Image (cartoon, rainbow, N blue to C red; front, side, top):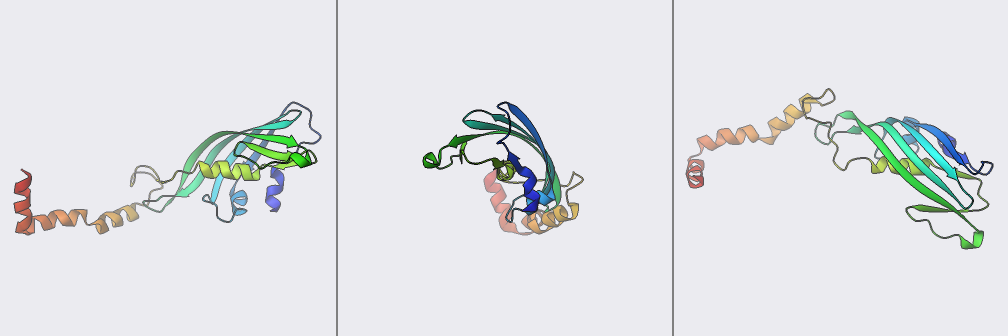
Length: 178
């Protein structure tokens, strides 16, 4: 958790105005989260913190690339990421502390800092596509061409075409189609 200390922003002494912060996200960041979908990457997080009387408005701009495994050829490839998100943090008295919602985080007036590492982690993981592919299979520099060749060989697509001509039952079925 030591590497996540830099993602804590002490807002208590800040003036009521906009403040900018910049963070670098790399392998050390992702290694702090045990079951992360993303294991490595190089990203820049620009955070604009707008401090107001009763709340903080956080605007995240995250750009860079994350390294993912292709679901087809299993190679590791870089995927570009561009994220823009907003989070509202409201201050309440100790007795008024309500549950957080997706868009609003509730903090006690006694709090003096906010940890944005969890938010950054969530935003990056939400940007991961459900199905990840390295692009045009077999034609990119990251694609494992041997794996694609082996998949084609084991799929039996070419073998079925050859078997169709040897078996006379297939000929009868071809005539039905016409």
